[in-house]
Image (cartoon, rainbow, N blue to C red):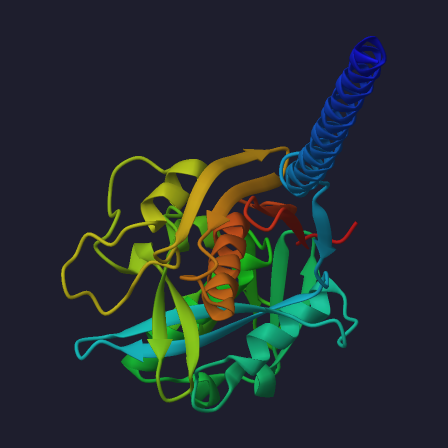
Length: 326
């Protein structure tokens, strides 16, 4: 009897040990399974993060630049700024895709619409024609009709020569009603072609003047100011560098390259001007960017560029501003 009890006890213990081992094995298998599942989840998270990083990188260095082509037809406008001592001629440039006009038509419109003389000399008494880099001004009248005050004299020629220059004109010829190159216009006797480069001087870039009443930004050539006066002519790159700062304290003009805009690279080759820049999108407004673009256009035109490319490295956008008819 005791022997049977001992055998039954041994069998029970064997079953108990087997059950414990089975339970431990099941628990171990469960732990392994949970570890595998956690590893898989971590792998998924890692893959997702890698994908997001790849997408961010694609938006950065790997992403293509957006290309924007602006209307090819540009118009130059002028006005006058009274410093209290003198009147200075100020400029701006506008693009218009609704006025489909030739270079000659746009130059003529810009000159006539912005003639500062009281009697609108160019619009009232002349016929303008363009032959390449030469502008011919045929006067239909002579005498007192073409007279002007001393202030209007300066404004008339500054506007005429400045606008002509920005359309690539090198010489301006005045012809009287008899067909001779000799006529008194706005208190100046003109008996030989006006050489634009000699009259305008070296290009030194542009600063801005804000018209509060008209709520418009204008651009003044630095040659009209003491900034950058004298010395050797600047290159396109040197001009842009100079335009970034204003040396005079309490100046009535400012830089078109505002805080938050940074020019990174500038080049000019075979008529193609390229300016790379970055911008702080929280600091730089849409208006600031337009002012910057207009200043760069005027500066490029001073160097007879046929095209300007502005490359915004922050927004990964390239804007093309054509100047010359193809």
